[in-house]
Length: 116
Image 1 (tube, rainbow, N blue to C red):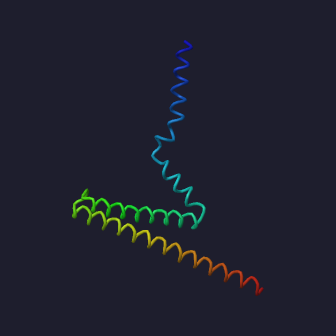
Image 2 (image 1 turned 90 degrees about the vertical axis):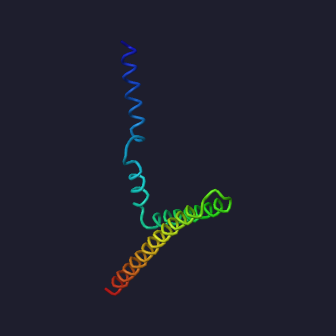
Image 3 (image 1 turned 30 degrees about the horizontal axis):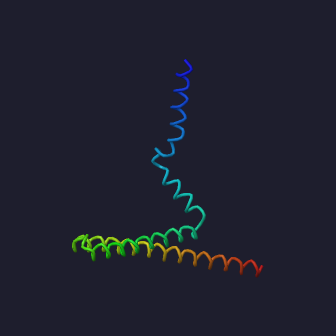
């Protein structure tokens, strides 16, 4: 009887520990947490993503020079990486523009408060 309860306890403990790993939304929670702290964190994330893509392009060029990739694969993968870099650049630019607009609005609000 004691082994039965011990077995049930072990299964419940295992499910409790494994639940975050089995959840399909675990990465979404991480991203929400990362982006909740404002644009600065998102900008850091996008800069890091851009650096990873640029590293991938360097790796592609190295593998192509070593003969591990065909020219077709190299061209296709390089185009994909360049397209992704452009998307990240657009997101970075949009975030910087948004930040500048918010700063202008805040400065205008501050100047109007000083007038009153």
